[in-house]
Amino acid sequence: MRREFIAGNWKMNLDRGGAVMLAERLRESLTNLDDIEIAVFPPAVYIQDVGRVLAGSNIGVGAQNLHWENEGAFTGELSAGMLKEVGADYVIIGHSERRQYFGETDDTVNKKLKKALESGLKPIVCVGERLEERESGRTIEVVDRQVRAALHSITLEEMAEVTIAYEPVWAIGTGRTATPQQAGEVHSFIRKLISELYEGDIAQRTRIQYGGSVKAKNIKELMAVEEIDGALVGGASLSADEFTKIVRYRE
Ligand code: PGA
Image (cartoon, rainbow, N blue to C red; front, side, top):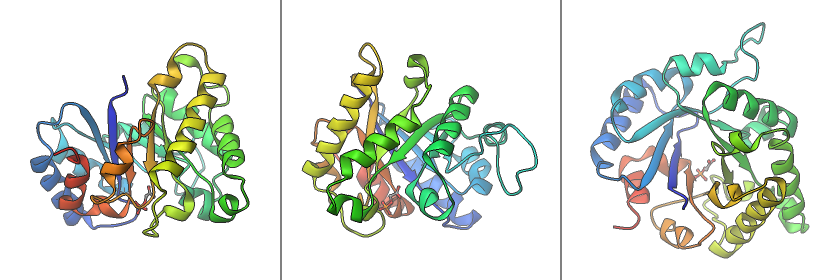
């Protein structure tokens, strides 16, 4: 019922040549994969170059952030329209690094999500607890707050386009992955919450990715969990070989 979705967040890495080369290699290695949705998220200044390489392939391209206004005096920011114009189809919203270093709040996540949906960008909304929140037994409370706030006033129709990524902050870039059981518990909670917030079977149709130190060697056990519908991959998505192995985890 839910099409698997694996995304590569390149963060603030690579130069133009490196981004183009990585895209070229993925284009070659990720053919004949109709059952799985794939997208990469280069730095915004390389979206157009990467998009040109991946045009006509089964790999989509997205942005790592957007602003919620259409235009105006917002120095350094990029609008949904601008991102679409250079070829972005997807956007990551509320990544923990943006929450931690750039003042992203539950409220701005919600505004960005609304704008993305209104503009036809397919959003991946990130949620996840910090280490001290997990250790003090507040994981569910934090994720509950983040999901409710992000989805505030998002309609049932809009919800059909939303992907959620559960990324425990303590697992991002640390080499420490949530166990399949830990991830599964939070994913089940998120799905239950969506089923409370929306009528019908949308909760069953919403993809929930796991993110945080996903590698070729742990993807299989994570994907074996019924509630995990894909992955948001950071560091390992910068290697064509490693990302290919992650996407082709069944082979
Ligand atoms: P990581 O990052 O795979 O390097 O842990 C995941 C993410 O930040 O999306």
